[in-house]
Length: 342
Length: 236
View 1: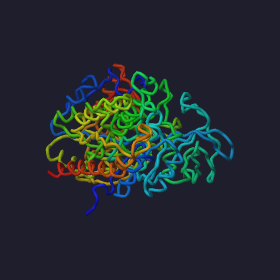
View 2 (view 1 turned 90 degrees about the vertical axis):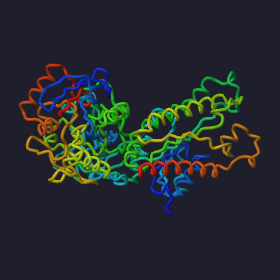
View 3 (view 1 turned 60 degrees about the vertical axis):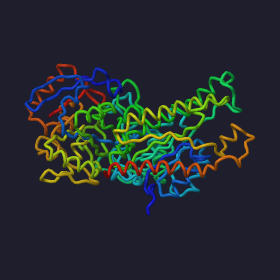
View 4 (view 1 turned 180 degrees about the vertical axis):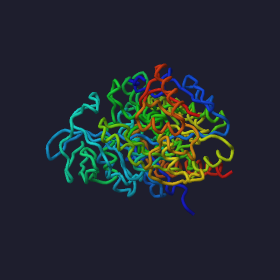
């Protein structure tokens, strides 16, 4: 697959590979997504807005320039904004692949870091020399203000230009809790939501703090995805229940939605509403309890996202679909084309 | 009885002066969780201190690069958004000038502050507002209008035409988002005793003008009535 190099959320020529319930592979323009919906289906997306989680600054003990990428947070509480887990990179910017970035200075507990107007202290190392727990000084409002004025969205070296927040917020972006965009949701716009209603399907959301997708460091990447807090409202839980009763399908937009819904699922396929922390990995051994289908970006073998797709499709069909994506020049990564597995 | 604004998350632009300041006070006192935006850091800090619980945000709605930092602080600090009040306004040239005497830059500035800014901010916050509506919380956008948006008052060309554009934008937005449950209001608060009015008509007798506190109360009541209508609709 080719890397999508332009940060356009809904390119006019976006493609969709549909794997239907009979395992047929169907190629359509992505705008035809709604035609595969049936009355009574429920489309669920992640409404998290993306934080400006990339912060450049100085490691005070050594005076060296660093980049801190915020990577995790214990909860979604707006006031619980001082403590994060974070990955620290050495000097450099997005044009250098993360794999080629210099290591940061040796980090120690108690080290102080200045990130523009923000001041942070490393509270502990999290089992890897570049993965730390840090605490920002100041009130919640001061931290939000500092992130808003100094932070940038996490950047990708496969893109031609640097990303701004308007590039990475989906149309439905609400609470700013994601560390990288829930990019399957780029497909959504207000026109599409109206079309979903016209097809007598429903739309609901969950909020899930989508974490970082890759660090360029194999040891670190093996730890991904980190634990991710999420919130499922009683409205969404009720919509899932109604969909079950009507015999409709629950269609997740993106891997984060699957992760949250399956974490909150009870053994008999019901959904607990409220706050949770998604810890498990989803893969070929997972028996999906709530989600019936997924609209996702295209994912390459070996990634945790690809593993998640194996919960939806047996390997032979997924292999066949992946070969088609390669053969037909589908674009991958955040701004790429999509697959719909029914 | 609990006030309808109790716990409602509200963002107000232009919140340190005139009508905006009066709205911050009115809604904070009624139990709303308020975030307000204004340009001057010192004034923002002062108003936040005078209104405990209100979150002050420094930013300029006329600046494209300030919009997302504003949106992220609003939704971050409040944990979402139910009501957006686009109040910050630019009067155009002062003293007021006939349109043909108005500098292009003055007209442009009025449109940037009164139309493009609210457009950008509303668009950035639409996801949060629609999420509020899905949860049955009654999402409302109030755009502050003026009788100058309707009547062609000589000398009010930049302000009046930009407010007319905002008024129409509001009406179209309301049509387009009514099915999402996000409701748009465009309301004229009337002629008020504010710094902006003094800049427009310096010799006006303040006694003939409405107090901004009175206008803020009336606008709050209009939003409350809209929220109650939405809640009624959901119940039925």
